[in-house]
Length: 176
Image (cartoon, rainbow, N blue to C red):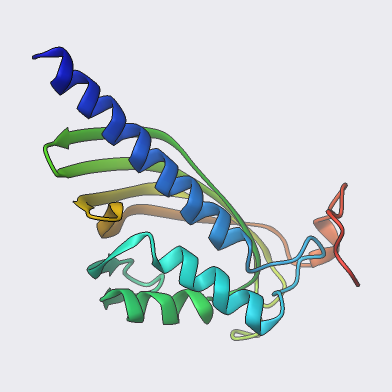
């Protein structure tokens, strides 16, 4: 493999990892440090930024955790109306294989969340999600974007049934 080919693969990996950082930051921006959903305008902006990480014709495949969605607009709607009143995401240990303008990736997901009111049986539960996320990527004129995001494994552990169990040590300037 030539130096140019190796450099292109390194740049592609760095681009994909950067988009995943934008994705996770946008996902987290929908919530306040006091474990509440942010104002509707902020949630909508964050959901739009999160959905912009996908191709216009992207597929979201999450089984019982979000179902199957087609297209960036449907994915954005799901992100805006998600089942959490708080969440924080970590995508780690990427395995990324690049082939020209396409790539496949696998990530380990760690997500801490507080369930919203949509299901009274789990409302306010502090939940740890772990799993494996599989993605297909395409290089578009605006950069690398997710074409398919699928959850190969997703495990949930209820850490507490009361949000008081989760405290923010540094509130990050949140207003009450």
